[in-house]
Length: 181
Image 1 (cartoon, rainbow, N blue to C red):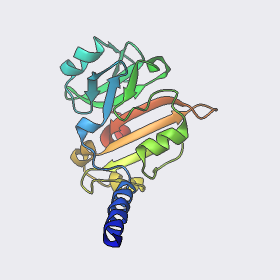
Image 2 (cartoon, rainbow, N blue to C red):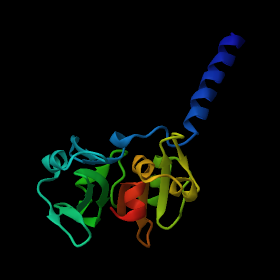
Image 3 (spheres, rainbow, N blue to C red):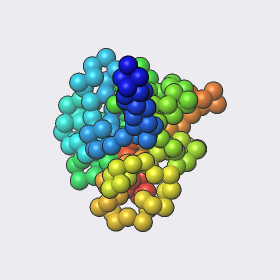
């Protein structure tokens, strides 16, 4: 009986420790948004503009080379594919990130959901390096990469109001975050 209990404790410890590594593996398809009332309606980094507009409708070009869509979604495209997605106050109750963070989510809940060490505090930003398949806390590790490599890495950024609720969410590849394209 002791062997079974010891094995069970070992399995539980392995599960707990594997969950503590933080963040897991991410790919382009993991970084995006979805409609709250229809999780099949989603857009992700790297998705074509045509597919994104099947979900979002037609957007209007803004002054910052992005496109604004109904319900507080702003998207930037590079070579016809999504390089960044932003959710503003108007998206509350309509869109959320694929890991179910939306405008109005408390900071401590965002930190718990992302489950990784942030690279910066204001805004709360997480940098994901696809070559190491992990979140990195030193921004410089990503900034030394080539332009092509920057397109494969992600930045998850969250701004908060004075009460600690998300007021702006920006999901982008590292190139878009660094160069604004």
